[in-house]
Length: 597
Image (cartoon, rainbow, N blue to C red; front, side, top):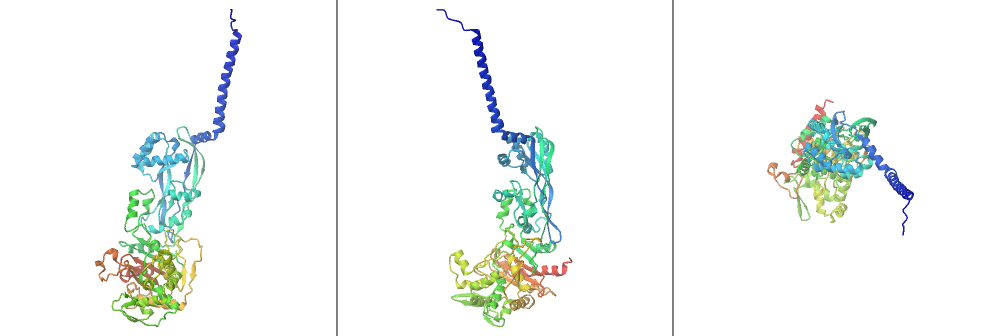
């Protein structure tokens, strides 16, 4: 059977059709790919393209300076250089981060983690790697710039504390924002690497000092080199913050604390302005500016002397005999005694089955309120405490500002403890025992107060009953009235002030070492026990340091027109009259005689 051969025309037509189908399929694939690239992922690749061409660099503002009340510079800003890496350009990332780590002598994982976090957030945005580059580091980085793709060195500013540890607890310090802080501050424009106030005025006035960031949009070529600046928004620098403190008085105060642990606060009793505030030992805030090492940070935290604690506002101490001023006011106001009543001090006060000793072993004999304050008779105030009861005493302590924030706004300030029956029931789940009131009446027991609260209390006593709101910056916001008129009789305060004059100026007064001729200093000494059992030892050097009493002295001058209140606390200093009162004397002498304005 003969088979018909296929026609050449049919074969050609089929070939053309197959070719057309292939072309159509290829064209369809191209269309689909273009649709995928341009429509579905167009924005992604547009951003990537722009990122390769345009770089955004933030321009940090210069942090505002901090000045004393007379314009003396306490904190400023210096020119600095910082290293940034753009994650998208950092290739190969492992080799680059290892090379940079070797220059700075740190673990490469530290830098690698920063780059990875930055890449996850925005691969085209510069990531801060290191602040405060020195000239040697800059030279090495620039000489290897072609081997270290993605690095950029930017001129910035950094915080500077030209006086080192001077006034460090007041100023505080700045440090890199922590992850926890970032959760709270990200809505305000903060991001990793930004500096933020961590303590003191730096933290209190962060929003004023910080300023507003600017930015620069830079066009780069394929190698990441700058072609031109497309646009620039300049930063707004931080504002100046002026303190109420006087640099010259602060010098005197800090010199008095050299070599001891303690705190001193000086207030203007008329308006509550802090004129000096010092805590010892101190620290150098410059340690934190470029990032503090873990070793140094741990050494500061573990130091038994607690240099980071501002004892003036954060230190909590029993007041000792300084608290007798409060009890004396309460006793007169509540009518449980008067200035004439005599109480016979035998040296030992019996309450229930316990004996409470007076500091004078054989007693003071018959004493009235004035003599009890002048000679700091414990027996007299044991009796007043019994008559008043814990809650009446606490009422007047609270009235005089004890156990409350003073108004500085410092976030590290503590309220302290003014105990009461309700406080003990809620806090310790136990009732208040009458015997505890006896110790409480001389400033012992659960009472825990800051030196600044004592200064505020004494301001009200010395100025005639106006409890001021304490202020540390000149433009501090007034959320509350500046002062509160206390519901205490003028006559009561007159009697108390007359007795406090005797503490300093009469022969038997416990504060005679603070006397300044011609200036009528009034004051009160305090010796606060740090242990439950008293150690009878006249030579303080024979008592272990950690068992020695804290020494207090609080004073104001002049008596009739007070211009300065001084509180001195010497930790484990022994007796307030011998350890703290002479310090106050020297401060008053400078203020009224040596201060030439």
